[in-house]
Structures are given as C-alpha cells and as structure tokens.
Image (cartoon, rainbow, N blue to C red; front, top):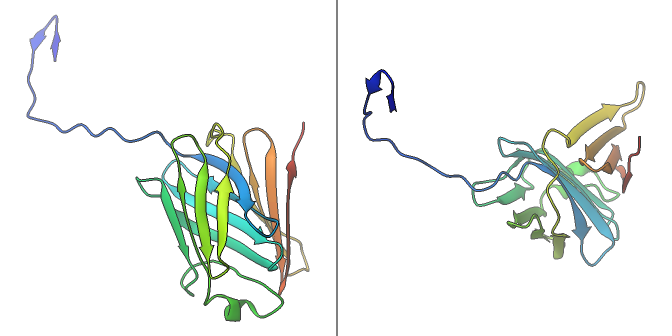
Length: 177
C-alpha cells in the first residue's frame, strides 16, 4: 500500500475468487408428471425447496437446503430434515423413499432428479432474480392446521404449496402490482 505518507508491505495473503452468487428464485418442472417446483436461494447458500409431483400427488417442502460452492443441492428424506412427502397417507410413512438432487448451471438453469419417483428436475436458463427481490413466506390460518409456503421471484413469479394434514396442493402464478 502506497500513499503520500509512504508505503507499507503486508505479509503474504490469499485471494479467493468465488463463482457468481446463485442467490435468488428459480422456477421449474418435475418432468414426466405435470409437476412443478421452486427453489429460493439466500446469499449465504441456504435455500428453500417447494415442489409438487402432480401425478404422484407428492409434495416436497424443505426449508433446510444448502447450495454448495459447486452450485449443487441435495435434499434427503431422513426424519432429521423438514422434507414433507404427502400422498394420501401419513407424512411419516412417505419420508423414507425420496431424495432430491440438483445443480444450478452458470446460465441459471437447473437440472436434477427426484430419486424414489424416478423424475427429473428442470428449470430454464434465465437471469437469476436478485436475492433482495426474491422472498420466501410461510403462513397459516387461525384455527386451521393448513400451512402455505410461498416463494416469490423478482419478476413477480410465485409458487405456493399448501399442506393440511395429508392433503396437499400447489400452483404457480404471477403477482402484479
């Protein structure tokens, strides 16, 4: 470092250049059965995954996802996660057979799979919405056991999954002004 007062030399330092942040909201399909999903990634790599495999009537809600430095995420269906899998039977019975894995490519597309259902995940290449514009919301109604989970993207894209006991539904849409 040099300025008008003189110069100083520091000890050796390491510089790490990280890849582009993947923070934001992603929206895609669970191939082969009319399913859809949304992934909300925070700047620190923590994420929320919402999905619904329509033909199998299985919903996935995980608030404990991590996207690693290689842009990969994996969701295990062990009882220690908050993954929900609901298909007209008790939630606990469905937790044993599903695992979700995926990768966010440099262009913002997602590819991956849902093991146990043999389904593919895919999200189109698109600019990632900024983390400040994207958000995750969780809400419940007074006197009801229903819980709604919502991911909103920077362009107003929205994905809502609602779970009530063993019933589940999900949908995507757009939020306007």
